Length: 154
Image (cartoon, rainbow, N blue to C red; front, side, top):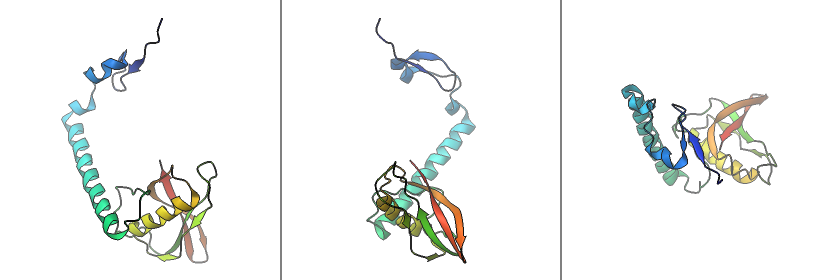
């Protein structure tokens, strides 16, 4: 007996053959709810506008960036951290050959500057798998300078 590939709808849990999934009319489809549909459309519009803004910024200010992707929650000219800091990405040999990265000393870096440093960190650590910049985490303070660690995703 040949193996049959089955799938389960994540909304209504109906089991069906994989070839039937595109025709499945789920009664629990969240997009049938006008409020959820409006929220999804609003998020999609925000995502597209922010993505375009970042693409334009990179093209104009940092065309060398080829790997790092910013969070849509941040604006390139917005201050990412108030005060003096270093940006740091530790090295994990599982994800690439390289070494830890620490930026130069910054005072009030913008998200655009952080993205530029993140690109350098990806290259130095060799971790091309985690190329989404999700944010910055407080790591430790040395004298009056904060060490911030890149929060990354794949």
